[in-house]
Length: 266
Image (cartoon, rainbow, N blue to C red; front, side, top):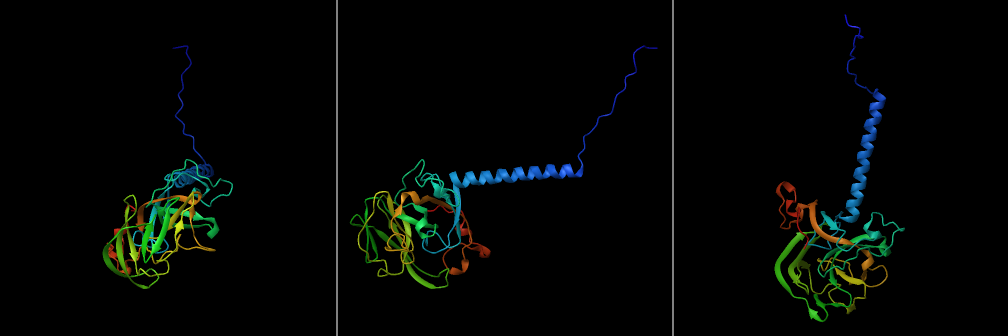
């Protein structure tokens, strides 16, 4: 008989939580996940791309009503207008600022127009002279060439019957883009000469007779756009809620505008 004490082994034990402790643990995990998503969304939308939708026809045919687009924030740098809700505590001046190029499709915010976001094409750089004469765009005294593409007949998003001509316009520097012209004698088809101030840009919609833009002067008008108001450059459409009943040549199987999905904005 051994004089060693008999060794007893105890079974493995599992620590169990009460239902309340388990629920609290699940809630903490959920809150952490939500917090991570919020932080990621904030960083992504401030420093990378932000999503916008197109509410009007001023950029037809490049962008259609209902298009959802990604806008590059890092294209022009960051300011208070890059941040959701435009917090006044942040400076207006851009950090890591970059200069936009002629032909860019630009999103900008205008505090003097109720902090509204707009999207237009940049046609005039600081120091440029811009003028419309009989429907033709002149930059620095030179007529911007355009080439007829086709006649278009469609129903606008407001239900209006529209007949227009589509042109391919080539801006100085070589950027080609499409425009609509219903007439060469509309309200803003004949203007005086605009001289773009330093630190500002001249913006126009591609739907030339359906856009309020830098051609409009006076109180409550858009005017020249200061660099500090730039939000970013429109890069790509993601998806679209375009109304396929408008009658344009958009691929719409089963009434879904797949032809507007994932298009590079040019």
